[in-house]
Image 1 (spheres, rainbow, N blue to C red):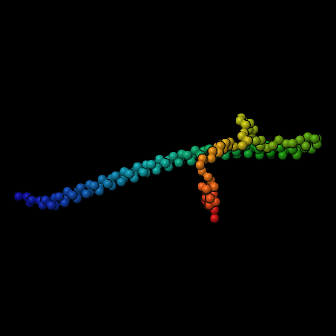
Image 2 (image 1 turned 60 degrees about the horizontal axis):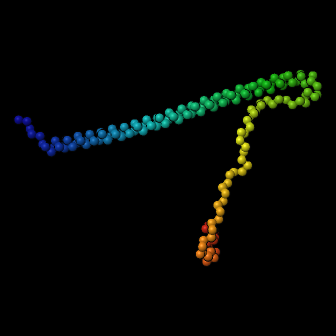
Image 3 (image 1 turned 120 degrees about the horizontal axis):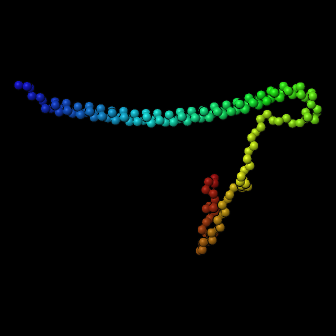
Length: 152
């Protein structure tokens, strides 16, 4: 005949299994929360990387544009200086005095469409309130009441 199991040991085993299950469940929940946080951080990092990449692209384009402008100006200056030496001897003095064109010509800006304000708008001060009837201000306030609060 098989030996009868002790009922207290089987309940202990059941309780131990339940505790292990609850621990495993809590750990699974914690890991899931960590996973969600990691996904959120990854998404933010991707957004930041995309914005940085876009800013870098804009900066590269601007640098290339400025480099081309500088190279054109340097080339123009180089050709002017080469031809200027031989041409100046031939040109009359009046032509030499003529102002040279600037190397870099700033772009013209459009006129303001709207006239600028001469002074900032100010609100009109409200009209003084009529004196309260039946109040004698000489009696109601003394010199101490009229001093500024932070006076030392």
